[in-house]
Each structure stands twice: as structure tokens, then as C-alpha cells.
Image (cartoon, rainbow, N blue to C red; front, side):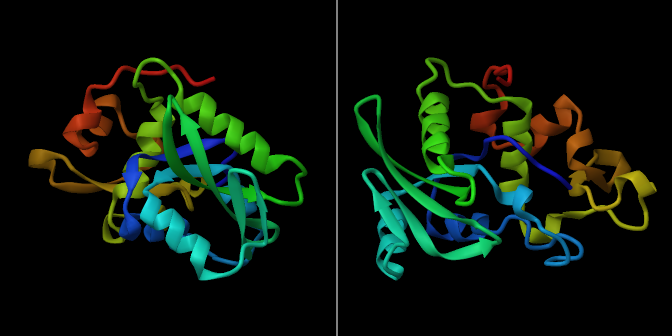
Length: 200
């Protein structure tokens, strides 16, 4: 599985429990640590509450602090580490977490700018990718996984979710192959009817 580009991976404000779950959304991936999985994490981001932000600030001395952001001293994989942001958006102070590749000069600033651009859109909307990432982030580990032997060779290792199909029962489906109606069924009610946002 290869992901790229800046990705909002959770809609809403993550509490402490959800924050810790999302720090490693890919923990179940096959052959964990066998490859350089930096691309899975690079540029993922989500909003958290002030309590979560402050807790992480107090755990260890930051690797560095720059204005509205600080970097965690511990690296997740390779040169990927957590960056925490305190940003004023539309007159409100908000808190965010993202993964940046510190070998890529300027990546924290680019991620900060992408978060501000995404969160200042005038209309609440979600792209298809944001809907899928929210489903992945909010699904319990028992209900998400990775395609294995029951899937075509080209699909093995791709993300899967359990889907209840009524009379057809529960089936394992590739996350990226969910139809629009299936996506809506997996989202919480308050997110189902948001307008579509065309990905930039």
C-alpha cells in the first residue's frame, strides 16, 4: 500500500483515546517493519483537542519548537516524526497533529499551510478520499485489516473493512472499492450528507 500527498485522516476533533489510535493507523499492515513504510505516514494529519496537544508537549522535551509548532523527539520510522501545531484559524485557536519527513526541508511548514488551506474552506465538505480515511481511522481494529489469501494477487496488502450487506451478511471489502452508498453507510450520520469536495 502506498499513500502520498497531504491527507486529512479524521473528521472532527480527536479525543485522547482516538489520538493514540491514530498515531499508528497502519499497525496491522502485513510485513510491518520489513520495508520503508514512510509513505504510509508522511503528511497524514488530524485535529485534536488542547488537552491532547498539551499532554504530548509535556511527555518529552521537544526535538525543536518553531512558533506555532513543535516536533517530537522520537521518530516513528526513518525520518518521520510527529509535528504538533497550534493554529489560529478563523479567529479560533485549534490544535493539529501531522507526520512530517524531517529529511525533506520545509515539510512542517508545507503541512501547516495545507492544514490552514483545508480548514479555511468556506463550505464544510469532504472528498471521497477524506471519507475513506475517516472510515479507516474510526473503524475498530477488529473490523479493518489488509487483503490476504482470499483476494486476487494484485489486491493483497490493500486495506479492507467489514461491511454489513443486509441479506448478504457481513463481507470483507477493499476500502478503496466501496461504492458511494457503502461509504455513506459506514460514516456517522452527521458526515453522510456533507457535499462532495473535489480533490485539489
